[in-house]
Every structure is written in C-alpha cells, then in structure tokens.
Length: 225
Image (cartoon, rainbow, N blue to C red; front, side, top):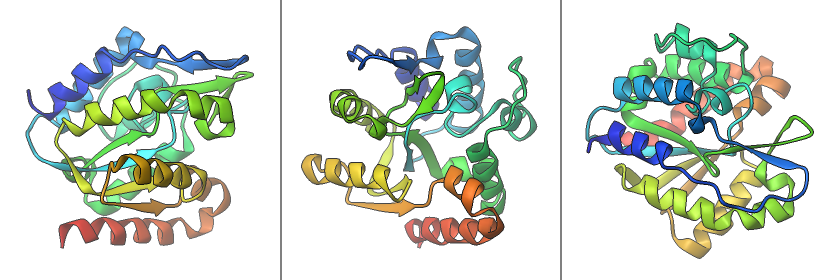
C-alpha cells in the first residue's frame, strides 16, 4: 500500500472504545460517508506515493475543521478553495485552518507542503462538552483514559512512512508538555519541536501572523538541510 492507502485504511478502521467521563462526547467523523469520501479524494491527491514525511501533531480535531472533514486543520472552505475538493458541508471557516493554509502557501503551496509533511493530532478524534470543543488535556480523567488509544494510533501511523527523528508539536504549552512526557516514557521521537498553536496565533497574535509563519518555515527547513 502507498501512503494514502495506509492513511485511509487507518481512518476507516479507527475504533474508539474508551469510557468517557460524564458529559464528554467523542467526535468520530470517519463514521460519516461524506467524510470518508472527502478523505479519499484528499489523501489520494496529495499522498498517493511512498515518500517519507515528517509528522506535525495537533491537539484533537475541532467541530468546524477536522471534526467535520476528517482532514486535520482543513475546514470545508479550504477543502474546496485550496484543495479543489467539492463538498456539501456548510462553508464555515475555522481559524486554525486559515492559518495553516496561509502557512502552506508561504511554504510553496499545499502540494509541496503535503509532500514533506503529514498532519495528525494526539487524538485523531475530537471531543466536545456542552456542545463546545474540548481539548483532551482539559480533563485529567479523559487525558489518562485515552493514553492507550493515543499510543496505538501513533504506532499505526508510524507505519505510513514517518521520519521519527524530529516531530513538530502544534501547541507549545499543555500539548507539548503532554507529548514530551509521553515521548520520554515511550521513545516515540528523537526530538519534538514546539510551535505556537494556530488558533492561539489567530485569536491572540493576529498582527504577528506573518512573523509566526516565518518561524514555522524556519523550523521546517531544519529537517531538509
């Protein structure tokens, strides 16, 4: 199987059997046929090869991006306008998706970017509480219970063709702390490089957006020197 086929095999077989804390629900977009169709088109467009890639790790999908499309940091608008994949979802934007695709444009375009990088999250499935996005680390019980699921997902994704010497973590606070601790215990990667999370940048540092994009690109260049 090529890289795309391995990703699609992973998402179509993804099972979540974790007992969730009261009031927390899981978002499993891959149970939706429209999501699987979009994922198939996306991964076959950008990943139908056997190139090795570096991994970029987010927190967990949100309701208006990967939680709908199944593609990390890709909302229905970017899926259509940048990736050229038509979809029937409401064209609602997601801040992190805007940032990531602007960054990809600065990198040389989505095609060039996806040839070098594979994006995932600590949890490939998202969580909600009171109909709002929930980060896995914001509930200590959830964080502990999903650990086996997280590790199993990483193990499966390593088989795609991931360079494990350097990983990039989106979120230089709690997400980086969690990944660093997990990495120390499980030896997943050689080095983890923290980057400010796209949503933080868009929400609190918008005027410095280009500066952050420049920093991202500087860090990404280090794996191609």
